[in-house]
Figure 1: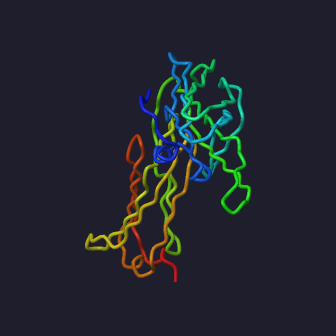
Figure 2: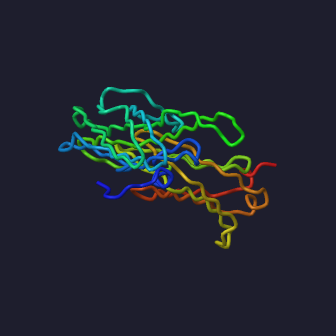
Figure 3: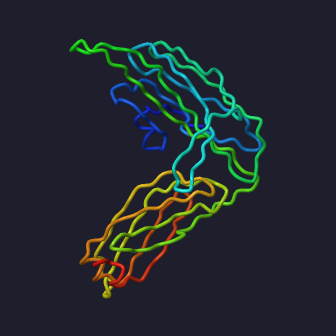
Length: 250
């Protein structure tokens, strides 16, 4: 377990979802991720009011899945218990939320997300307008499968009318995080003529996501080879494609 607090804004860089007005950040959370395995069925989340005002938070737990395009889907669930679900906190106050489950490990990793949301409070601005600020953070929770199997692949790589598409699939039973997807084109002499990188997100078991990029026409037509490198939290995936002018459009 993490031994120090992380401000909500910093946690965004650690893949903890943060939503809301940056000026309204007012609580810290630890840990940033929670894992349950065969031996661990209970954990705790420590939340601290780091703002200048009293704070009321509401916690909800969702089953987390992804559709065929890798879009996140959430459904409220009773598979994981949270207590308490409402926190009233004074300035500087720290409270603990107990988290538990009776779910046994299954063939595929269980994936959940705990959302901590500030119950809106209306504040008056200098201009006299009433404004409600909301801060919302999501902490991922994973139920380790019976037997870990981390696998992924670049399922397809194509170029049509100068547009690159790479489809990345999670073939294993554990999540991984796509840290970056880099496209690279070289000419017949092996010199790099194009490079573009995109950031990623979680890819859950069985899900896939398409990453794309547009190639300038002259670069596409003079290119010889396209490479894609996908760096994940568990491994690196690679694929390559030989280019020809017909892929580049008119």
